[in-house]
Length: 422
Image (cartoon, rainbow, N blue to C red; front, side, top):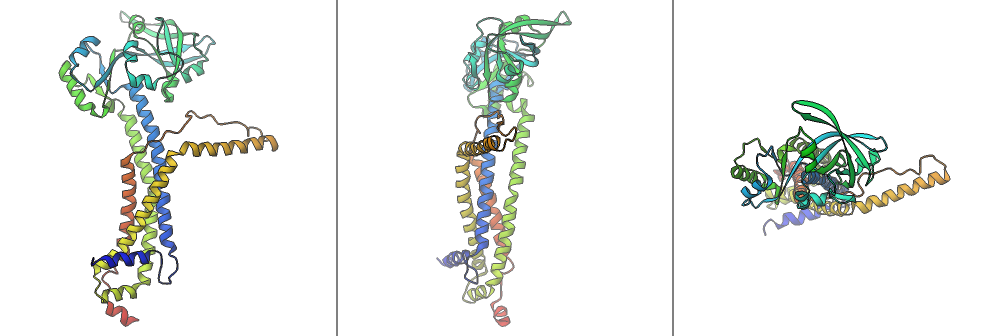
C-alpha cells in the first residue's frame, strides 16, 4: 500500500511530460518493441519450420535416429536381443552405393542409390509419411525395380515405367571393374528436401546384396522419442555387446549440419535483436530528459517523504509498462503474422503477378509474365515456446536496464538544493 503512489505517478508520467502533452517518446518506444518482437517471432517461426522440416527429412529418410554399422548378426537376431528396449520403433537394413544413372533419352546424373529392405521400410511409419509418392507406390514388384526422386527424374527425363541404366564399380577378388545394370522405374517420390529428391534413388536390398559390392550393411534404427537417443544407444550396446564406434546417434552423424543450423539461428537472433538496443537507447534518453524536466516534482515528492527507492520505482514501473505493452502487442502480432504467413505471401504473389501481367499486356515488357519457380509450395511454420521466452525476456531486460540507468543519478536528489536553485 505504501508504494502504490509510485505506480500511480508512473502511469501519469507515461503519457505526459512536463508540458502536459502526449509523450511521443514512450509511444515510439512501444512501437519499436512491437516491431522488433514481431519481426523476430515471424523470422524465427519460419526458420524453425524450415529447419525442423530439414531435420525431420534427414532423420526419417536418410540418417535414421541410430545407425548400426557393419552388424555381425541378422535382423531377426537383433530384434530378439533388443526386444526389451521399448523406445525402438523400427529397424530397417539398408546399404548405400554411388552410381551413374542414364535414362533412355541419354541424360545422365550421379546418384546415391539406397538398397533397402522393403518390408521393414513399410513398417517404418515416419519414413513412409515423409516419402510422398508422386507416381507409383513404394514397392519393388520386380528385382530390377527402382524408385527415383522427383528432381532426379525430371533432370534425366525419366518417367514411371521407363528403363534406366546404372553404371557402378564392382569389386570382385580384389579387383574393381565397371558394371552396368538396367532397372525399371517403379515410382517417383518427393521428401520436400531438395538434396534427396535430386540425388537419391531406392532399390530392393536383395538386388544390392547380389549384384553390388563395396558398401557396408547398416541397420537404421528409428526411435519413439528421438531425444532419448543416448539412453537407448547405451541399452542397445549392452544388449548386443557392441563397441563404442559401431553405433552412432543422429546428433553425431549430422553434427556438422545441425551445428550450422544452430549457429544460423543464434546469429539471426543477435542481428535482428539489435533493434532492442536501439529501443533501449531511445528509452534511456527519453526518460533521462523526462527526469530532468520533472526534477522539481521529484524534489517535492522526496520532501513529502518519498524515498530514493520510491523515486526509482516510478521510472522502473514506467519502463515495465512500456516493456509489457510492447511484449504483449508484439507477440500477438508476430504470432498472427506467422500463423497466416502463407495467406499473406499468397496475397503479395497475386499482386506481383497482376503487375507482371499488366506490364506484359499493356507495356509489352518481355519477361514480365514469367513466374519464378519455388521449390516449396508453402512456407512451414513452427512456434517454439523457448524462442518466445527468450525474445520477450530480452526485450523486457533491455527496457528495465535503460529505465534504471536513466534515474540512477537522480534518485538521490536533494530537495533543498533544487528549491534553492529555483
